[in-house]
Image (tube, rainbow, N blue to C red; front, side, top):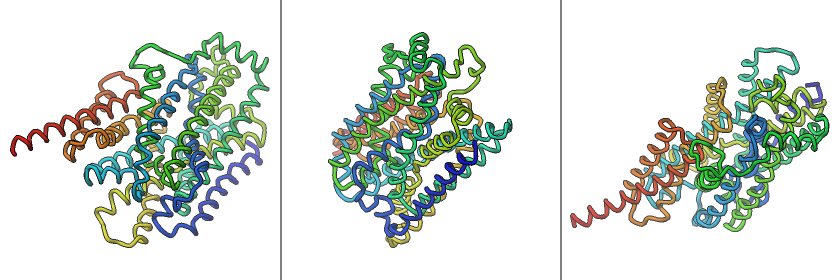
Length: 488
């Protein structure tokens, strides 16, 4: 990378910190810090949802899925499930978010099942989100390592990975600490534009560099079966089949977008259910287009590197796009695309973690303090959560597994029981606190058994975890009700 590229990259990072400082003057209450005063336009929330969902994992790992020799468009089957899940959330869950003044989605569980269930669900969210976003930091570090290798020719990249994790993590902590959720959303609106522009620029250069352009790429894709979309076999060990995608993707989205504070908090920044629905459904259409686009970039990379006849086969899926960006893009464009990947990494969950930890865990234990006290604690927890995510990224940097699979499997493991307890509250009138806790325990045990004792693929984890929680909780509710009636 040349000096111009470095100016673009570090100028972007400085701009993110400056944006956080700009919004800091408005952060006077916990309501403003966590919800932006509920005055954020729905279209900005929609862009924020897209930026959050696509992140660095999309920018780097999805092209890598297509680049793999056996890769094709099968990943879109999962996206179809994402769309179905959004429809279910709009119909079943969004109206309940606007009954009363919620700061977190887990406060709904307080009303239905009591503090213990709310605390368990909130704790699972904090753990899952910290681990998943540590993976995001790591992917961005891989990009900087590729930049270093291209610029200096050095082979010792671990120090660069560590340094880049620290730089990106600190920038994320700073703008979230000062600007709160309002800064997060508006920065994500800008990020969406930056990484779409960066992806288009990279695809354009790829097409120019491939002999024969799109016609040659399409012919190669046909030869290697890259355009196959539907895999209708009922094989529970494969993550990208029609059934795993539509069913597993639907339940995964219902959990991540319907019961996960990271995304529900964005709906709560609007002032009505209608605007929240518009934001969520619009984001689904954009996400489908984006995933299609990033898979096409993977196909272009396949045609450019031709791994079936060159040494490029040694490139891992998560590193092939960064390699192209740093070694084959011209000055200026390289910096723009690296800045785009940084942008995708900056979808900070730190404010959502702080909101959950303060509202659902700290405030019940330390009640009757001033709002200023809780705001100060929130900022402190923002810093701690950022440090924890940096620690996760550093601890898994030697893993060879696809970061996309790692992040989604983690989400699938822990979100299932949380979604299940929300469904239990909606569909079972007899289940109380003991039944809800029993259901969540059963759901968590079920997904852990799937993960460590079977070859079942991760898209099924959320479905199994949520339905097990719902069934076990319902049965426990019936049993406790019969026992009470028997005693009476």
